[in-house]
Image (cartoon, rainbow, N blue to C red):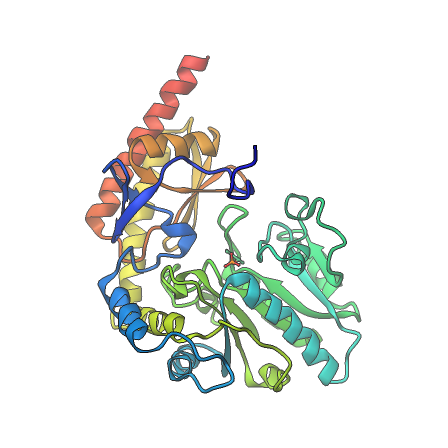
Length: 397
Ligand SMILES: *Cc1c(COP(=O)(O)O)cnc(C)c1O
């Protein structure tokens, strides 16, 4: 018999009752270190007192009015995002997928309004992930995401990851209007685009008059030690998708754009019932406040450096389990030799939570508020988990 919850996830039986900072407390009382953070969502830790206060203060005032009215919490959050990014204007929605949907609509509308309506095609990359709606799976294009869900949304051309010649040729095609890319690919196994490539993409877009769309849903919001990952390369996009970490666990997404592009979205062209609601915006404004405080992002980089150093040691100590570490900031991937799901299960036995990704990778995405002591403890747990995987490998031989 089918479960009352749609069987579209293969779930662990672990179930958590409470969270405190980087810790998740299981129903049976065990305390797990959370090195997934809900897949880069719980950016400031579980039950962060500042966010709890922002949410409950707002909950006692006003929950919802609709976008037919001015929403002050929304205006405040938009002003903060504009102040700290390339963007001139922001639309709020409820998830990353919704931000991506608007990115595609906006890019095409911009073409329609600026005399090149034939330039509807958007270039995307192999291994990318942009969400689960029909258009977003069409954008990513992998069989894993799209099989059985056709007909797909037309207008995406998928390029091999890292093939500069293919990219150069595709960008010159007359039907192409934009490039959409994750500065650090998440789902495909934490694959950062080198700064040189991001700069090259910007140059290519400028050369051919293309819009550059960054999907910073996973790699943004402080994760790499800058507020947004592309800042490391010293370039800016025209459009950017944001979600996950911006809400710290409250569902909210945002689509940021320059004035030049955003102005085509005139009244009536897009909307959302819940997007930009006072609750989500109050929480996200507190997340933005915390992340832009003096020293916060430097702290992320410092802790990331220590974690990475310790992980290099872990990989060296367990060459049969791990191949290497890759990633940026607190968005790290352990490329495994043993099956990644075995490593994750062994982690559960040692009371540490990690997230799988493609390419046999284990993702480490702790809350950005993780402490040095917690990092040390996590690596000790990982070391025991890796030893258990080694023992199992030896027993199977
Ligand atoms: C999670 C994710 C999405 C989709 O976001 P949802 O909130 O699940 O709709 C899109 N792009 C990237 C890079 C993501 O990591």
